[in-house]
Length: 158
View (cartoon, one colour):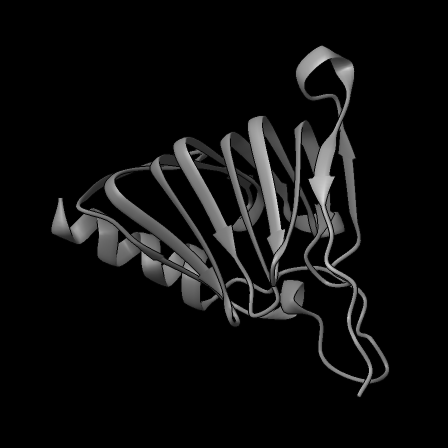
């Protein structure tokens, strides 16, 4: 299995050029290489499957889950699907949920299940979060009784 993971790293982690527009002030996260690590994994003609302490990295962002599957064609990674204890962290936010799908072409992460978005001390919960990895824009929906809930702490000026 080690050779499969090595091939996986070369094909999907190092040699992939991930699509996305370049922001004027900084390079987009989605333009950076995607690295993978796992206890076990397998390569398929249409992608890969990783298990056991799986972690995907792209720039400073990390996606962890029990299982992560990647789908692609022609050497291009299209989607990454994570399930089981999903945890996505950036330098500014952390997101937890049951399942996540990252669409590489539009830099969008959709997290579903019991979703918790944390930014500093601020917390927002719901059942579906759409998050742009380049801009940090987030859209939360659902939650218990179809409502989202949150706690926000105002910044105090000195």
